[in-house]
Length: 440
Image (cartoon, rainbow, N blue to C red; front, side, top):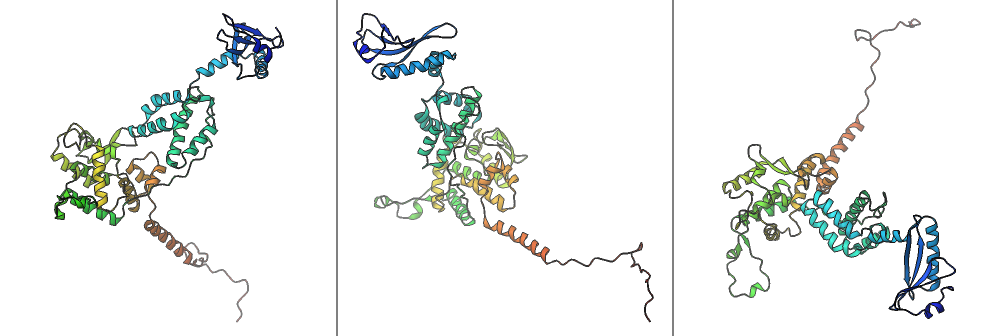
């Protein structure tokens, strides 16, 4: 058979069965002609173990004879070096994708080690970002450039962009543990995170005063309606402003007060049960760290007073049950709806429920608590996390700076006293004899 050229290939006619045309200048390089008329370049070889393999290089048309022959020539070298191109191709096709990695990461790590709230955040990142952009790629083929491009697309939401990097980095580290990638090959390494604007919102004394007044009104006479432009035209709008008040959910008010006085997370108070309350030792069982099991935690007298009020109407295993279903705790939506009304009336509309926790950390710092004590108070994993809650406040820093400055001034103003002369055994001055008699 002559050299496979364009003329020879175009002249090859299909038959009732598939047939091969072999090139006489490169052993193993040939053309497969199917009964349908489709023509593809192939390379046939034997492995070191003696097994015959036939590898399809690509269809004629997509590849020219010259390109196909060059590919076959490269494969000849690989086979001589002991490689098996067919096995390599099959292994690549069977290799896990990023979607496979994310499935295993979710089942073996997230569901085992992460809290429910964290799982919700991770699920959003995996489903909405990682799978659509990287899901079909092979785990071994993912490069730093691919990740940088994805990170850049998310630059307008820096926190989400950085969180995406963290999730992907953890999954790829586990891929190394599971043998899906070579060790120390994580491509997320060295990618610089975007700077995030840290939120340091906490309540000032004036804001706390307005919040206290609002909570009192919400608990007694209710909060006024929010009258919009469209409401003013309604016929049945009460003319008396005092009649334009509606009560606020009592369970929600208890949750908000407990959040403010404990510095706890919303989910920890919502799911608080009477088995977590120790009235004798005045403790509440709260997670030692986010996502961990609950352990006794000392609380203030105010907290115990609130718990005592709830104990008077105890009707559920939950400390704060729902009004209509005592078998379930009060819902997050009810509390957040009440908080939106309260913060609007108290003129603190930019304050989130979680900022009450920030406020506790800040007040603890202003009261002289060090970072280690506040870390235990807020039950953080480490002091670094505490620093995000203990906001910088100028007054205690100014006081501390003044104390240090005064001590420095006192030290600098002191003058050294003259050194005392030598003393004898009894402490008296010793008179040495003169070498020459004193002149008369």
